[in-house]
Length: 431
Image (cartoon, rainbow, N blue to C red):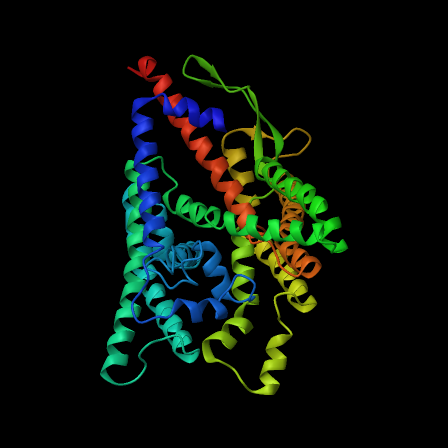
């Protein structure tokens, strides 16, 4: 991967794109340090942390700490991501969107425009909820009268504007940079939390040196386990099942076409990090309700505490939802009937299976097995931070969803650079 970036840097055009992308990401981190008026960050930090087990903690992690600090980019690109997920799901359910997805470039532009509009609405909803959460917990300087109304407008509009600015910056990286704009912004936010994770780890080491046996034993185990998880994430992101496909020979004019052997690649982790995002959104609803509405009733507090981030119930429900959403997402994206029909249309057959129903059943069986393996992988990676938190009393922030995002974006960015270098390498032949 480092060699890929080194080779890309030698090409002037790619070097300009890399520099442009770096400048945009630096601006993003500067904006993440600009505080929003009328908010007391010190009081806010005590309420919102990545260990709270609610959606606020997840937003804070993805935004690189900007959410807890109530800065310009507090919402990050979460509204845009949620909008993209919603529109993707609705594309299957709403005929109008389905037709747009089949209209080529013009249709994709219209869908992108709709996605932006939905992102604005989601940003307003999250900003309003965030404002009332801040007010309920007494982190605002003004809450009543004309000053309170003015403070509310400024806070909500600033959060929405920051989110839309980030969305635009991501699009600029796609157009003028190396691509993968929104993913790189999330990547940068997560990596910016790395110093805090290192600080937590160093604290564990010091406590182990001072005589705490549990930390003395867990530190080397944690290092080995963390390296293994990253390596496992890399392998699973690239792992695929290759189904052999044989194409029959046919005569086209005076030429003999086909007859070659190839394969149908099916990735083990077909859904990426989406099931974890969906599951996190649902399982964190109780904690988010408690944060938004400042629940004080003893009965409701006990009920909501059942879904505490470090609790057994939370972990079990979280794991089940990940498996369910993984199957749901794969079902939405991969249709064995369509794949089998495409093979038959192109005179392709899978050796040992007849075209049609037999091929369809075989592909469905392979996808089901790979989906289960991918779901288990996601469960292990997502539950790991919870186990770590229960063992050490302080979970390392760079884990779970973060690992998948960091590894996935790094690999995808390297692949994009490699493809662009190949295009420039063969430019002379194309001319």
